[in-house]
Length: 234
Image 1 (spheres, helix red, strand yellow):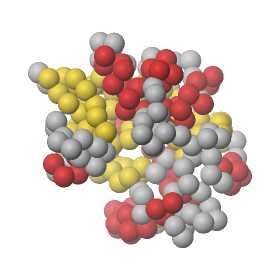
Image 2: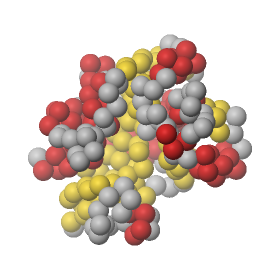
Image 3: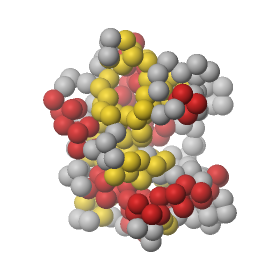
Image 4: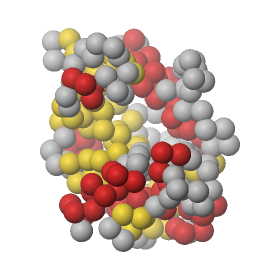
């Protein structure tokens, strides 16, 4: 499997740390955020890292070069940063089989190997790491809906969350995700949501598998969150 890393965003909530560098190169516990992401994927024996860059992306290319820990690194640029579904389509020419996806600002120490194993054992179109959060947090992002113990839907920022189970930014995808992304329409802010592509797969009766987080995961969006993960990483 290849590992795909979206790292195109401006990281505006990380200012002033991202005024002169991309978010992925902001350091925590002595290493850039992207280094932690790459290490997670390399530990899962990916054959190639495919990085989607945008804001100050040339700095990422210069920093990591053509390989990381012996694994080849390929770069694709997302010129218009209009959502993760569009970002994913940038890497389609590089992908000829199932692949892994880890957000470029997610630092985690968790059972990612269990996600890969579940995906390989089932006929799922998507397998994702999930976590149970508070009802309040469940309404602030994507959240899954379940029927008879199976994923029946995924919605963004619902006023009344159908569950407390949220995705944690780590996925195993089949290539079926690409045609689904092409069918996604923009939301009210003009973004093409990856969760909408997953919802389309569900509507086509494709299976979505979830694996409960065992460990910890932090989606780093603010300088405060950098401080919060210094201790477990140190």
